[in-house]
Length: 131
Image 1 (tube, helix red, strand yellow):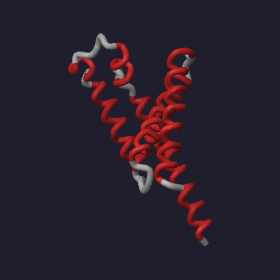
Image 2 (spheres, rainbow, N blue to C red):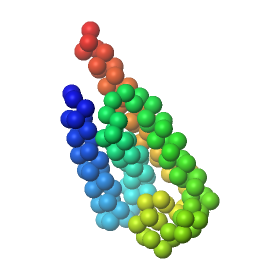
Image 3 (cartoon, rainbow, N blue to C red):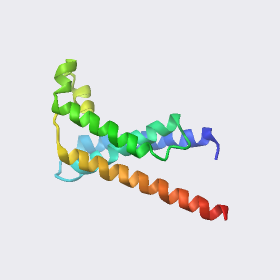
Image 4 (spheres, rainbow, N blue to C red):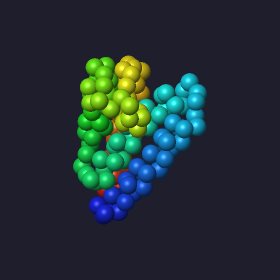
């Protein structure tokens, strides 16, 4: 598959996943999907977004996304929203997050593990087809 086609697929996946995240944020007010599944999905959104620009050879990308996500979560511990002066901007406050939660990091780990499992599976599948 060409890089252009891969970029289109990842762009579409990103848009669909962002739409799902928005729908969860607006309409789901439970104790599982919104707080946990949403955080698992957010790292997958980041992955598909990065893949628009880097469509090939990114085996460690889930690890990099996990490190980035943990970094953002740790910044929440230090009240980054207030430091940046955007606490009154609802969109940025939601995007960055304002409350540190160790459970979020666990969700990021689960999402990145799913991504890494997918990469391992597709790599093994590709090697089988090459034989």
